[in-house]
Image 1: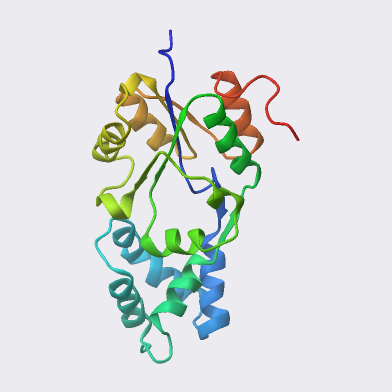
Image 2 (image 1 turned 90 degrees about the horizontal axis):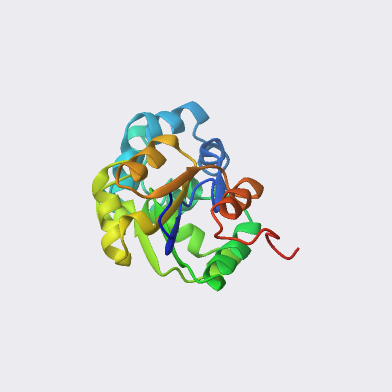
Length: 215
């Protein structure tokens, strides 16, 4: 039997916003003339993006690593332009903004638990997304904590941040390994994408009413 849920954590990517790394690479082609495969190797295959999301690089340090990998200088590829280019790949799942508000109205705490980097988070927060009108009760971001899901440490941090029993936390994420890690700490959790699938899950767990949203 499930314990009573008190707090709901949402993942960011593919739950609140969609993203496509191919768009990031295309941006480097369009803005700086760098071939797509070169960009992919420099950002993702190199491990630089992973380290950025672990908080091991500042934005300037990440940008310099990418420039060195691509063999370009800062004059040709300024840091601000580079960081925006690799971050301009998100689109909001607009219905999820209403979901966040409705979950809070129903008496639950609402938090964000995400693997992300400073550049992506900064870019998202500068957009006119409805989601940005919402203020989370707890925000746990990998680049700020120095650890990423599914490492148990970030879940422990998330638990401490909200101060409720682990069994009373519910989590939505799009990756099975992250859900399994949450369940191993006795969280209630479900793997799904944002949108209608998320609404159905939240209804099933009685976090949203059976009527869903007023639309």
